[in-house]
Length: 114
Length: 116
Image (cartoon, rainbow over the protein chains, first blue to last red):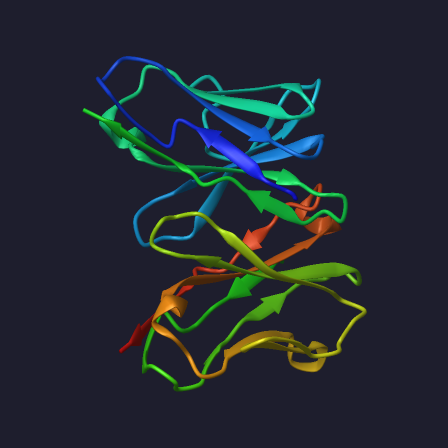
């Protein structure tokens, strides 16, 4: 149980395009999901908290117009990187809150912007 | 302030050795949770353990054990008889009301290399 999937697992895009990453809780409902960014050999940096049916809460320094988050249902949250640039290249990880507030993480999406 | 410190950036051991990964935390919450996650080279974070602040009992799961000591604000993780498959980055994390909606504060991680 408590499986979280992410799609795609890897994406390469041209600079200026937008990329959408999906995060799904497969066997449980999650009112809260989180989006993280991880640079090579670094820790996870929380970008935003995604709440079902309401606006996401962004961490300080994260551009909400750049990283659009939508949590349309109890099992799906999406992160759209708009007008991507090479500096947006990173490993993006989502997680979903379990009933004991533990987080279950997706396998991550590696984004490369050329 | 909420903070998690993993002072060991990288540890290398030979297979079958025991190894302890340190985690020290700071929080003003009276109720909080501590976690350990493993991140193998594939990148996916694997949940290892969750411990709440009222439960100081040590935990053992196979070759893994955890020592939680509130007096020293530490939550250390020991792997007994390490194996090559244990090679990964290990993260300690803290959550509590002060972090907001039970968000996690992650440590910087400890990279463990187990050599055959």
